[in-house]
Amino acid sequence: MSALTLLGATGLARRTFDNSNPDDQLLYVGTYTDDKRTDGVYFVLMNARTGELQLIGSANVGPNPSFLAIHPNGRVLYAVNEVAEHNGKRGGAVGAYAIAATTGALTRINEQSTAGAGPCYVSVDREGRAVLVANYDAGSVALLPIHGDGSLGEAQIDQHQGSGPDKERQEGPHAHSIVADPSNRFALGADLGTDRIVVYRLDGQSGGLRHLSANDAQLEPGSGPRHIAFHPTLPLVFVASELKSTVTTLRFDRERGTLAVIASQSTLPTDWKGKSYVADIHVDSLGRTVYVSNRGHNSVAVFSVQPKTGALTLTQVVPTGGAWPRNFSLDPTERWLLVANQNSGSVVVFARDRESGRLSETPRRLAVPSPACLRFRDGSAI
Picture (cartoon, one colour):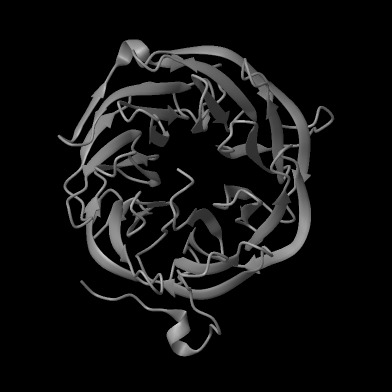
């Protein structure tokens, strides 16, 4: 294994991560490196008490490490390389990197092909046995088994089929995310190109990913489902759909793995007339609030969740203080919500009321080139 570069080693950082300090939180930022930067993953120190951010390091993990995931044990980071060709072969890659306990520095373990072009999403199953990847350009999903040392085995893929009514964006399948359900028995994949939520039987131990086609959910034509979030207690799934800027609530049968659409609603103010595209979605740990980011409108939509039914009510739409909010994350304390504004190159911190879920502006922000994904070391955000 070869150690990766730390900015701190060149004197650019005045502080290092202290894992014994409860106020120190380590954040990894995945970025697009189309500007030919070498280092694509940035290490950020966050003060959980004040919300202050400080850049403390970076690493070269290959081109376009646009999406990251952390193993449940907090000791391994997985990063996709969102490219069409890698090492002279068609398809992207995903790498495994050991996280140093005291500094957060990354050390390469190994990498594997994702067996498809344009991997844009990576997650780890709930038991830490497998990595799941969505290959956007190829329209396929992949499962890669995780070995005892955190390294990855070869990809097993499932190729999606079909298209949608948007001839420019839905000419074929475009897998955009895949995530394990809370029981770790199933995995759900969002396919933007076919307007489907694809259901799999998941067996991380044996490397199994079996498509249960009868369980798939068909969403509104042209909606373009992108990311998925599970409610922590209710049998519900929330889907952020990019092309129509909507969030859709589905009932999820935890025993059979079936889905049923309940309702959809806009993530934008009623008077908005411009173009906007939904990106990311998360639910707080108590299941009281759903957050969705809007690119174009450049905002985060805040929905309150009815405790018994899970019905959503739009309560707030907050400007993100930058352009093209691609990904966002709640910090481990859930006192703060951080937004990655890709086109304006900034990570912006919002204070969060833990009872109401409402957000308020803070002066805390950090310049990071083309930020696309935010992951805290504790792996709280899938």
